[in-house]
Image (cartoon, rainbow, N blue to C red; front, side, top):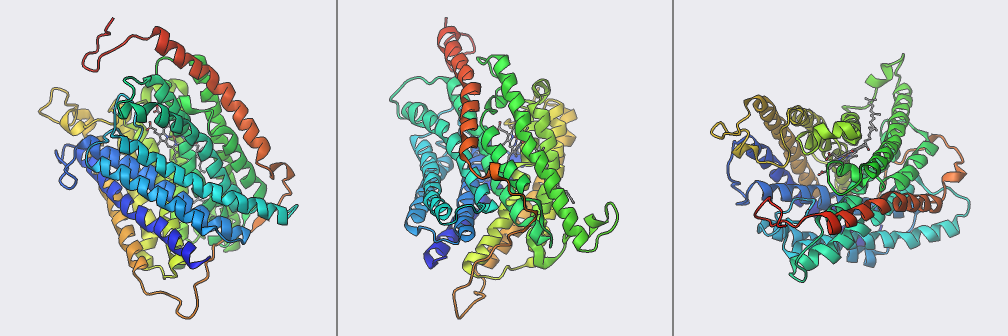
Length: 556
Ligand code: HAS
């Protein structure tokens, strides 16, 4: 890695860490607002919805995109033993940064209080949409920068298997490219012109459908870099091997195929889309859970192999031998905690995906319970561990406060388990998501007061405070590392990654090329989305009634 590449990758980690912290602060405020403990946001002078928007956009969109790009910039040149084109990489980083700052400023000014889903008729300042577009375009530039490198490697290494890290990172960005095409259409042809006053109306159902065409694969764009670290780093960190290389490749290809044609499972309760099409998306949703189930078995087998290598005996003795508390293997604690959390994230996802059960949980606090066990669980912890590892490598600094660094994921796991349990139990009683319960259902002065929800709301406050403390500890250790004295004096530090060798290295010839899987993905997308878009256009133009934003009564 050149000095310039190292500097860029360090910035791609440090800047979003600051933004993540602002977002996490917004998260803590959410729990306090919802419990009615605070009524106005003392730091950002905002309100519940402004804080929720900042929390969602900075944590779930900005931080994750920067990390995925930094991980790709690190692992692709490293695994292919080639140099990164730093000019293009810097251009992508600058586009992403300018876009994020733009969106961040308008959110802080309260001009874009539209939540991370920006559903119309909520309207944001045009710079919010422009900012998000620049962030996405910047990430595309990063991806396009890796493609020539990969093609050159394939020409120079005919017949060799592409390293699994590269397969994983390419899968992440293929899914991202397909997904972001629809949100680009939504923003450029609908929301931006509407926000600029160039058009008066937007088709709300079409906007929601285009958003979820993007929104579900977005969750796999978050998950896949974590999977890259699980498959490539975790077994090695535990002194083991990856049980099956073919299973890893199959999992990534299945994500290419099934990540997109599932989006209407977020719209089961929406009007305008026929329930038969929703059912088809529901069936594909079960298909997209399969690669995660394969992952559960493959990683468990890899960990079992590692535990036995470390002297574990009997049916379960290997579990106790894994390096949970080895300070030198602090990264392992981030990956294993995330995996344990994901068992519950996965179960709750399958509940959501079940069409009938979704009627009980949709738009309730159950849903944020679910996604704090996925994106704010395994994904966040893998990205935090990965950020610390990347900064330690690229800046050549020793990891500081190793004991504390190791403890962060365990403290966080306790916090997020309590927090999500509170949200999910409340959700099953009907407690809504995206609602300032502190001003309504949790307020004894209000006619809406729901005393039976209160224990669960209080539990979320306890969990939320523990999660916040874990992140504070992480951020302190992270910046202690950033500002630590450099490890190497005489020569440039060498960047290395703990890449795992496979235990079973199957030839997997049928999994060596992305092309057939991308073609199947496109066919499934066309088949599953054509009737949905047709329904949306039919019902919203021919059948639906016009409303004024000020009245629930149709205008005609
Ligand atoms: Fe989800 C809503 C269905 C996964 C994120 N999801 C959301 C939202 C977010 C989100 C953010 O069908 C809210 C969106 C909004 O704002 O409205 N989700 C699923 C399903 C899965 C799933 C079926 N979701 C994720 C992931 C996310 C994420 C991953 C982020 C990264 N989700 C839904 C549905 C909704 C939804 C509906 C709409 C709800 C509504 O009504 O609004 C599946 O992909 C999950 C599969 C996962 C598994 C788990 C495998 C377990 C593993 C761990 C193994 C552990 C080991 C450790 C080996 C099957 C891999 C062993 C331990 C030792 C010590 C040895």
